[in-house]
Image (cartoon, rainbow, N blue to C red; front, side, top):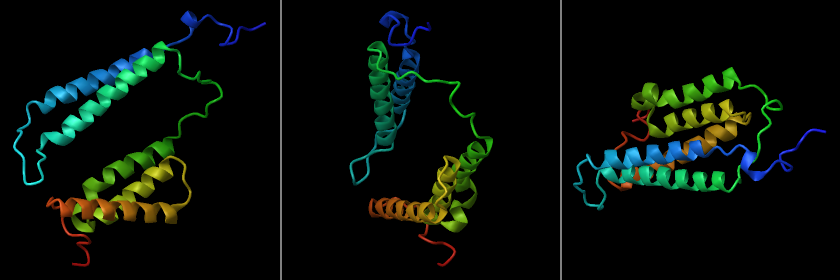
Length: 163
């Protein structure tokens, strides 16, 4: 009779705390890197290091939480034999979606580029509702453009092709 995971002693179960440790180390490296960024602020009170600090702190906190979950044995077991193999097409679509801003930002503008990138990445992850994904991407890109422009941060024209 095979031994199930529930029947195994808690000490013998796989505890992938290394993932949390790696994430915490990356967060610490981000925080250390933020120390070298100039701390001058503009009129909104945030300097260039603010985002780097926020990302580093977030990674560090998530890493510690993952370590705690692993030590308590709260990770769900994954049946690798039942999983479908990774989709090469899906990966390539997501990769193109991430790379598309490098190629189109200047002449399409932020909202249209965000729309294309969002739709490609969601399609790579299995979504087949292209029109909805394009709409959501446009709304998110437009909101981000508007938010940054209100903060005085220029992302270029809203729709450079028109203007």
